[in-house]
Image 1: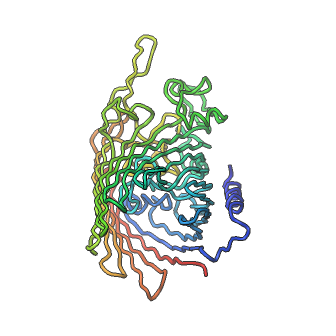
Image 2: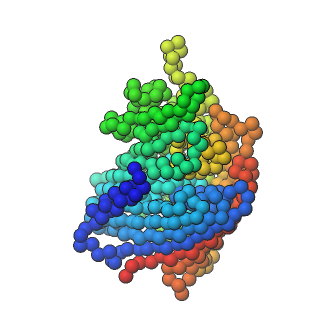
Amino acid sequence: MKLKHYLFSLLIAAASAMPAHAEWNDSIRYNAEFGASLASGAHNPFWLQSNRFGFSSLRRNNLYLRLGAFKDLDKQKRFSWGAGVDLGVAHRFQSTFMPQQLYAEVKYRCLNAMIGAKELSDPLIDTELSSGALTNGSNARPIPQVRIGIFDYADFWGTNGWFAVKGHIAYGLFTDNWWIKRWVDKDSRYTLNSLYCSRGIWFRGGDERKFPLTGELGLVMDTEFGGKTWWPAENGNGGHWDKHPTYAKAWLKALLPMKGGSDTGAGEQSNVEGNFLGNWSFSLKWQDPSGWMVKLYYQHFFEDHSMMFFDYPWKDGLYGVQGRLPKNPFVSEILYEFLYTKDQSGPAYWDHTPDINYQISGRDMYYWHYIYNGWQHWGQGIGNPLLTSPIYNANHHLEFYSNRVVAHHVGFKGAPSSNVDYRALLSYTKSWGTYYVPFQRTKENFSWLAEVKYHTKRLPGWEASLSLAGDHGKLLGNSFGTMLTISKSGWFK
């Protein structure tokens, strides 16, 4: 689908969701932002371009202008609707025109529906301080989709708020065809017109209004399917396109993972159709009425079925602890995360054969797939960015060459005065490459960010931000950069 057709269809959908008598000036908030960065070294530093929902660039010395208008849902009303338009123009980004968000949504009681592209993140993860969720983080541009479900926790009947549930089902499409055609090496494998399916469910036990301790359990499963794959010339054979099923049964198999039919590849016939992945999430939080908070959490990632349950040890995952210190203006929140992805079901893999009818599901190859482009959008990994995104690949292949890592990450923030906020991120990563293409020697990297924001009551809605960041090591190379942003937000009156 061409970009102009996609934008037009979303605008029509947004307009149709708005009541004819709606008074926009009641609750329309706006945001305008200008940003520019300067950098030296290999590229724009890691934390100046990661976990910004893809509205960023690996290329040094870039700038942008971004304008947005939003009507938010009123969660206190039985019926409410919302919409958003968020557009940008940029220099030295993946594209000059950046349609970042364009969506419409509606709520009735606890039920929700949304159509379009909206910045969505994992509910377990703090998007400001965390290194990023393992499946659906804040690193890549939004995927336009139709999403239905219960987006905010709804109490189970008869539990008086002690037990709640939320979840979603979504179908969408990747929009990076234009970028892939211009960026990717034509002698490599790549896929266009990929479709997207997501489903998730979370349970919460406890009511912090009555007792400070609450716990959460969540399961997310995503599938990349459909489209067509370019297979380059090999062994004297010319390159060719291979189309993947997009009929109704393929959409069902994306929702309920099943083996592929005779019109799919041999690997999909013995495993599941499409690129299937997801994560389990667990958290315990103590929220004191005075504002003190401690949260422990763990995310376990899986590819296909091999590590979805307990067939193999759950060594891999994102382990985190976060604390809030409400009476400390200098450090109001602090977070530590440990990321381990070395195991991936182990180094051995064997599929069924007539001679040896046994299955060993090792070498899961996180974020990578032998048919699809992997778990990326516009070159940025959709999950945790510490597993280096394809946008870094000098050979312009859509592969994740560094997915076996051990990483430590620290984030903290504060507000030393009423006019000044800050945050800091520190990340150390050690990578072994992949099982299929291991590094001869492990590569390490240290990335950091120091960001200060200034705002004053004399200029309501205005804010200026100055960021310094750097990379040091052989994994990403050495870089240093700074970014300045000036923004104005408010309400139409």
